[in-house]
Image (tube, rainbow over all chains, first blue to last red; front, side, top):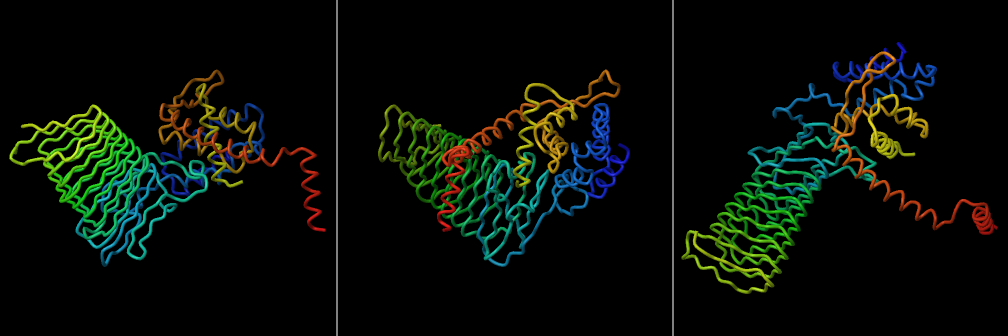
Length: 318
Length: 123
């Protein structure tokens, strides 16, 4: 038993595992080996059952993070990769389970940081032909292929410059997105909560299932919104042309928004607007209501069409 | 067999072991290695990782044989993880069996006919 533990300690140290962790691991093994001895197992049998010390240490080492030796300018985060950027570039992000933050800043580098237990080496993180790509590892058999790292966060800092195409898709991930200037901004989210701020784009497209979405300070030419059941909060939105919403049961809460025609298709979602100034509204709903309270009543809102079973449109003074 | 794939299976087994009762490390390893060859997929690292991720809690309890034992207990998060993993497994293995059964069972007759067909082509 002593030999096993000694060897295990050696291997764990070699793999750079923290001292406090090593102690715990050794302690656990001491307990287990005692049990095994009590059952009369030989040393070889023990090794078959527990794995060789090297094997155990390698398995543990590949998931333990050695945070001490990662250099980073952001506290609590390690820097994984950086790419230097010379001109406008596109973004393509697709993540499952990892929370992430994407934000623009004055710099000429894309930087990918991480926090928590995650092996970014398994991800596709590239910058080729002016496209920044960050994708889940490809595995034939998803859940059994890779470990879900429920506690990891990825932070992506990008230069604040024109992104002709910014495409983001997230499943089970919460995301924060700040300061993006783009042509087409497209975000697809399932289950995660999204929080966006300071976005400018020509076309702003979202597609959400279940997750809530908060958008603050968006300046765009057109909005296409599709939501199944997530709730949406919009604040300080400036949309030159159409604001098209397609919702099954998600509600929308709008504060301070100007837009062209607002076309609202819903089964049972409601729109509640405060200082919401579309030039016109067209509604197709089963039971969804639109309720608008505005300070400036001189701003006329034309009701273009209304097809509704039991929904209503109310526009009144705040 | 692909070791990542196998690791996923062991993970599912470890979660399953703690479904009905709290168990100590050695017991978990013993119960699994009784049925599966775990030689190249050690259980302890998986157990430890699942614990670190909040799927299990641990506590010490005195045993009548001397030193206290570390018991592992499933958390709500662990249970949810088990359910999702189990769903995926059932779906996968169900699909595999659908395919295999289409080919017929591994009975003598099926094997004989296949062998015959192979040989015929060769001639």
